[in-house]
Amino acid sequence: NEKNNLSSEASLKYFIVQAISSMLVLFSALMMLLLEEFLNMMVSPLEIIMNSALLTKMGAAPFHFWFPEIIEGITWANTFILLTWQKIAPMVLIMFFSYTQFIIFIVLTSLLVGSLKSWNQTSIKKILAFSSISHMGWMLSILMVNQTLWLNYIA
Image (cartoon, rainbow, N blue to C red):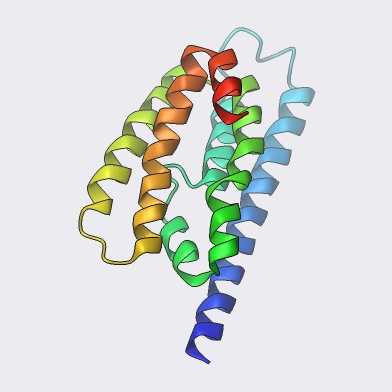
């Protein structure tokens, strides 16, 4: 019964986080289309909103606070899906909407948070969650350096 409650709570948290992130992605994409002529000269705050929403969907630091708790409450099959396949589509979008200085900050934060927070964990699922956060930093850094190399990595 307690495991069922934990799974239900994790599902609800996941739904809320993903729904809000999707809303922000759609909002920023629509606003970028509507305001395209006004924002060509500068990095748009809408690009930062888009990147933040996509990074939240992936669970990258500092948008990771929901991620370990969700991983702890779901089955192993869903853990595998959430740690792998769920990250590919947002990364592809980041490839097209990336603001490099912001992504560099996210890379460093993900590497630090993922490695430091995993040291004191006793749950294998939380260790995997923080390992995924740290690995996110490496994948984003590869994405910034060479997109072809990143595509070869995930293939």
